[in-house]
Picture 1 (cartoon, rainbow, N blue to C red):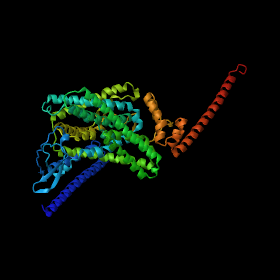
Picture 2: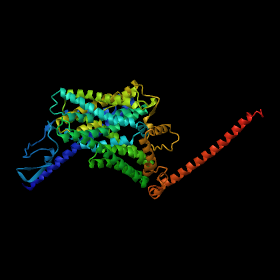
Picture 3: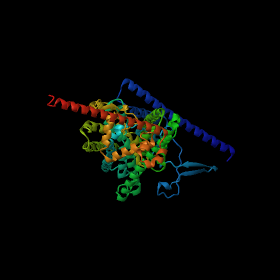
Picture 4: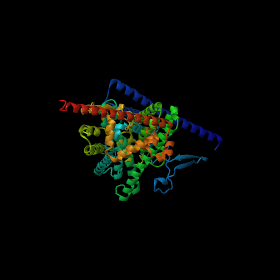
Length: 623
């Protein structure tokens, strides 16, 4: 082969890369244009006060329209392909080579490299460039789009009402999600038992996996409408708290079911040993991910406390964002669940690190993650709409979709109503979850970004493709129908202006100090509620005496709360700002104590004088 032939091949390769670059740029431009269109339409709807379609529903509709244009507006061409038969023994997917080196008979001096992608699917090659490029790698969602959404959920948490309802939230998120997963899985297994056409490729563990991922609720539409209405603060906390924590539970359950399915090898049989091994792994992964997220949050708090980076707000904001994102990557690199880590990292950062930031960085971090959350959410919902028409390997089963609708409604009812009854047994009358709130909790169980991301991550089998197609339908139905009816549901249930209501935006990420606040009735009620339980009482005391003084400039400082023999260590861990604030705090307490003592002495003298006067008035000799 001559020199001219080499130049021709290189030139053709450059042209191919240029063509791919143009197609990629065009696709991204269209996505950004759709986001702009969503923003302008949202403004129009807010201006015209049209409450029946939320931004996420708009994103799905616009994405679907774009998907139709891609699917039917361009000529479809079959791409060049070559069927190769290799002399290999395949017992596991890992036996396949990562790369294939292809040599052409008339070009023996040059080989071409092809990398493994996934098992071949039906009609996969009958696509055109825009349709192929519009289908993003699922890892983009997990590594780039989901972390800001989950972190924002933890970072923007309304701490006061969240922790006031923490017990109920844990019950709904952990026990309720588990109930929903297994009820949904059981109903879907009954479905495939009735319709035997699916039984050949859809196993019992596939049913459980579907139940786990579809139990991840994403009521972003409901919460957005809450921000525009005066709603019950406890209801807002329950809806928000359940959606935040149940994502983590759904991910962990799905991973445990996948591990169980892969370990047993028999997808329709029960293996007790593997079951308990998966439960052990489930608990281990959850707490390890929790530990990584919390540790990274505490480390960031220490960095912002003991450095003067707050004097440079732009650097401080950049450090905060990078440390938060590195939490996700660290957990994934360690083989755990980054979504769980970044969620609890957001909660820890809100509780500690936020108080160390400068005022400008506090505003910047909230606004940046609010913006990233908005863009990521809408980008995912646009992609959901596009995927309905551009994904070439859909597996549609009408009976499975209909049964899945019945299953998620039944599972949601089995979750909300029985657990609400149990929770109400330990609640006072004014704090009970009444029937209206239960109806709204049932209604707010929308499916969204998390369910879709878990479904699209693996579509290598016919069963997984059926799960993706069904999940798409459920997400679109719940977001558009339930999201559009949320405002009406608030009116029908007469929940727009309850007696115990505030605008949820009023509860910001402030630095609350339960011990030193004298005017917060809600905080005192929260404190008395937490003190009913020894574990909360112990954590509250530990947090106030050790964690806050260590990780923030909170007063009293460690030098005041820790034993005296630890003074050399506590002085090292206390900043100058804390020393100064601690002295002022001590003088303030001393002044208040002296004032109280003086007031008590004065009251005592007055009481003695009143008693003497009373006795004189009743003395019979003076009468």
